[in-house]
Length: 551
Image (cartoon, rainbow, N blue to C red; front, side, top):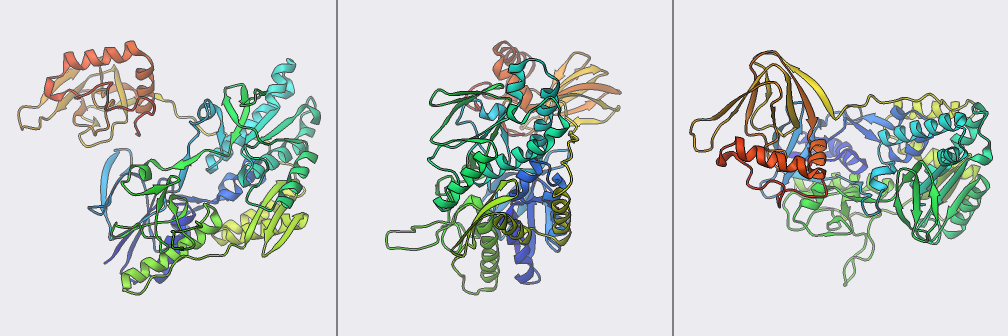
């Protein structure tokens, strides 16, 4: 049996798995590992943010989409290309499970990376996942609700100023949809006039939609301006705060809403691999193999795939778009199946159908098959094209019904709030129940509120384990939180007990930002643990001082 593991549930990973299942030998074990149990159709996220379709209509369950493929919901912790295995974490126990493979497909895509601009990471709304789009929708509605009742004109202006950074496809579609949603909803807010709303699209380059012909980009910009959207070209964002966005040229916008469609970066797992990269993507050959690594392939945004070969090397590369990722996945599946069967591989080649973008108010721009379109006709083509790309007949039907309803019905302004998980929460453990055990990934720091617990740490040399009985007011779990390591001790409730748990990353942020607290824990560990059980380094080189450890 040949084992194929695909990491990532985006376009590249899903379409590789879907096609591979159809053409691979019957005894091929195909597993797709994703942190979520669904596939997100990202081109529809601006419409989710604007309430044109529901958040659930932009996602499809992986088990429904990939019959015959074993989908595994888990977090990838490590990739060992030499031993051909992958470590993943599943469930509340947070234990590491190792899976071996014959072929590995890296389809981890890219992650939101906004730290280059001060304040964006803390205050901007990204729009990469359905949860991001839903959060943005709730926030925009929140701004309208408060602005309708506030008396202070400065606060009202701040609430009604919406800033979108980045004028590529995602930025233009997001700003157009958000403005359309606001305009259509103002009739329900009698104290907000259309002139009170300010929407600004900020772009670093000298025009929007750089992937489209200039004529279409100019039309899109004119339409956005006609809809009341300010477009600031040749403008870089210098910084952001909770209430302002400052540009590099000194202009400052007072706003409660900044949406960032820029700042994509490589997955930390991809960065950690000792493989040649360029532009944050893994360099592969035209067959999507990773050179020099047996059984390893890469696809989608994680891969830099050459489209042409010249004596000087590749000249063009596949762009990180959904359209290309779908075709890459299909070709990669064919190559993996060919490798298993001993057949020749085929280089990736694809001529795109074109590019298109919705600009709101039932308008779009499109360049396809050498033809340039704009307006309502381009909008209909845009919807037809993306409907064809949507996976699953049921998902297609739901989206069509939502689109039809949106033509004449008002947008739903009810906020769908997610239940917020507190960073510190109380937990109850019955007598004899384990709080944690060796081998688990540290999940937090614990303080005993009532009851008592026993801490037991085995020693590497086989000697007597270290034991301590802990009472009300005592704490535990801090010893390994400052280091990238697994739990080595076991804590058991000696009686019915209640503890307060602070999540690992929040504990890390608090202790690293509060020197007296960090000093306390260093002294506490030195005073209460034998030398052989203390972390070798606490608050030093083993901890990244900028980014909290991944939990």
